[in-house]
Length: 288
Image (cartoon, rainbow, N blue to C red; front, side, top):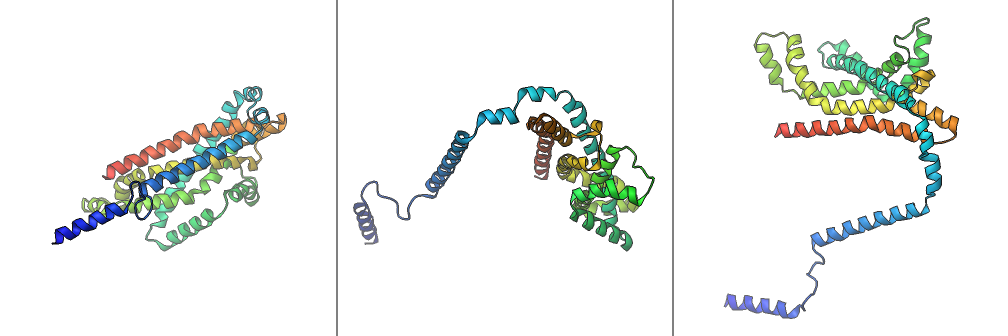
């Protein structure tokens, strides 16, 4: 009896719904997703076509992609701008990494004054705009210490200013140290190692292996922040990419030098970003 009633209900549903009728509840989830993606792609294509149709490509090419102006920038854009940018970034990263490690260890210290100083340093320099730090190094240090010259000239000043931003690296390093299992330190101490030797030989190397990807991202940020060196009053031979492109753009009345400087920045930052992604992917595979 139950079988006959079920068969009758199925028969009524089949006869009540004409062929090709919509399924109750509307479109399937997969179909709705396909329509949504199709609409987004269509909107993107329309926007691109409209922008391309409205743009004055002749003026853009003349003012932003002038081949003759671009050729006149070489080789100085490489030997001066790109080289100085790399030097400022490397010096700042080295000082920031060393200072960040010291501040991170002070932040984790059991001595209260060390922790207080590290906490104050991190909160102050992490909250200040980097431009103010550059102005402080370029103007405040000579006034505070008359007759004192920072070694290395512009590179030393830029490295000090970028290194003072070690507050970000300090927090990254501290997080890496805390991510190392406590059993590693306890095992090292049980083998007779002192706390200092255990940190130096066991914990810190593992912490740096963990934080290599975020440190690579910090290096990319420092590379871009090196453009603030122009506020230090540098000479022609000390110009980095932004200053170099800005000066040449003003001299030639053309924006192409700034575009070329931007491309040179990408030659540094894109490989570093790809390296950071590969390191992060390798770490994820290692955890599995």
